[in-house]
Amino acid sequence: MTRSSLKILEVALDCINNDKDISILKSQFETKQLNQSGLLSIKPKIFVCNVDEQSVQEGNQYTKDFIEKFGEENTLIVSADIENQINELESSERKNYMEMIGLKETGLSMLIQKGYKILELDTYFTSGPEETRAWTIQKNCTAPKAAGEIHTDFEKGFIRAETVSYEDFIANDGWVNSKTNGKMRLEGKDYIVKDGDVLNFRFNT
Image (cartoon, rainbow, N blue to C red):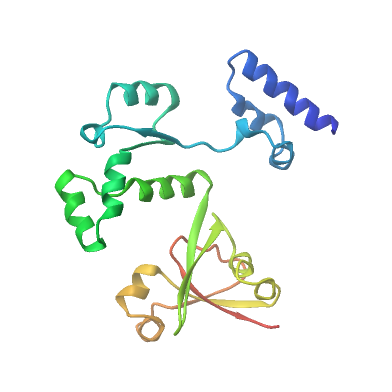
């Protein structure tokens, strides 16, 4: 065990034993050191509160007390019973059922969104004649790094990225109309990929 790892554990133990906020570790040590320590206590957390059907929209006294202590940002209120009912319905029936009970999104959808937010992740898409795929990247990822998620050769030989926003891509029925209507851009190595971008990479092998 390295000296820095031992120091991390000593500070963490002091926080746990004395009811201190363990997140202070992030201000005292580098991210790489903390990741190597393997401490579960500093991993990002999402709290999921399972409630009855009547409490799924506004929560109850238990969830209010919980949020008061742990905060709202990473807390999710769901009803496992409702989620089970939604999963048993055909996709065409789900929307009507959710509208009837006043739900805008499923618990699973909200969990994914909170997970992406807390882990600081984005999604971009590639789309061709045979398939459309989603790729997960870290926020503020450059275009070459995003290309590397597909294959390392794409990152090494990166030249340009043909780029269309998801909204424009759908509104224009794909690449051809997006290009014709001036919605496609050519972006270089410094481009920061935005959540929902549709990309086509140009590269040398």
